[in-house]
Length: 484
Figure 1 (cartoon, rainbow, N blue to C red):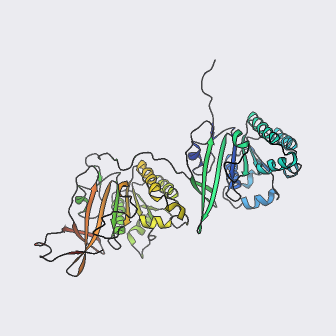
Figure 2 (figure 1 turned 180 degrees about the vertical axis):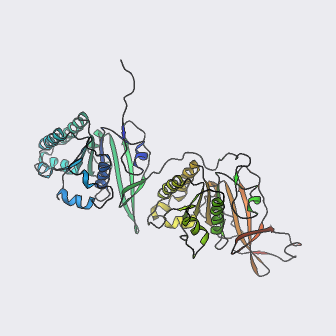
Figure 3 (figure 1 turned 120 degrees about the vertical axis):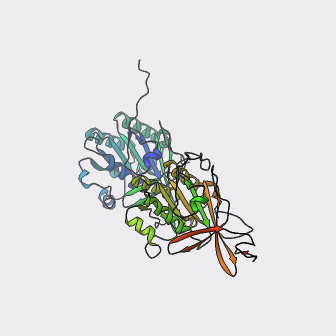
């Protein structure tokens, strides 16, 4: 007797991010429901999966139960990049069930499906919209039992035919009383809402038998390429508990004197928060960080939320991007989520094999998000930092800091605990002039300077000077006053 576990083959859906959310792919021969309100992307998701998986050896049957002909639906689906005209009537075949469903006779509908499946022997079966079939059957017989029996019979038949099945339905809540929720092996729920001027779309895999899925709501976007899912992954490791770096395994930041303040450079793989008021040179330090990496043969990635890098605003980063030393993450899309940016960053890190990442700035990042995502910005940022840490890159983040003497904070978001090192920049008034000061607040598990250093900025970048002396030294006995 064979007591080994049955092997379930997982299909790769071809939808970016979906396989991760599903827990490694879609179980073959599973019986699945794609549910959600009208317009949330159910049909597009089904077509995207179908064209990715359909082959002459694994053909697809797409049953439509619509008030419009399949050709009209196809006219719109052809606008997506995944649509493959060559697969129509070869690997993909559409069958209209509208007349069968209109009779309200579920046995007749099932018989038509059986006839088509027996003739075509498909590996993939889609029914859109399945809820229309159920409503027609309900209006004709009014029997819940007959509907439940229809669903169970359909599920058994599809599994016995070794077909992976997708039922699409317009359901408005997961509390709907429907037998399909119990019979289905997988339940994928698509949600959408309008928050001010942004459309927010989220996906939840409520169940997928036989494998662990990523819990929670995952944002997704519909573009010309179809759906892209941005997995809201659980924390893989605890940020803020980084181990001490190996001796000498430090990187230079490209600002003379700053590496000495940090105790010999920033430990590789650390995250550094540079906090300061407007005009204090945060973006200049970020550019120097990337430029120093390029000089050492390292590539970088930047997500710029304040100003898009160009030569009018600073040639250093623009030249690095043009030269292929730095990849730019597109932050111009409206209604972003932190998870979407995290996925883009990780994808670019892997694509260019980057070792340095810049996020400039957290304030601009938050303003770019859809309003609904700003509410849990701190929690989402923690997940993003965890994802970046898992890649081994060194991260520099900037944050706008209102300069107040009586309110010592390093980020308006309360996120300073996320980073391994902090540099703070401040202004003082000295002899009727503004002077800039810089200090290293922390470098986890490493000694560092605790002095307040005067620095200035010119066309060549940041120049760090001596520690601010006492009244008998640099200040010449003149009192200083903080600006805030």
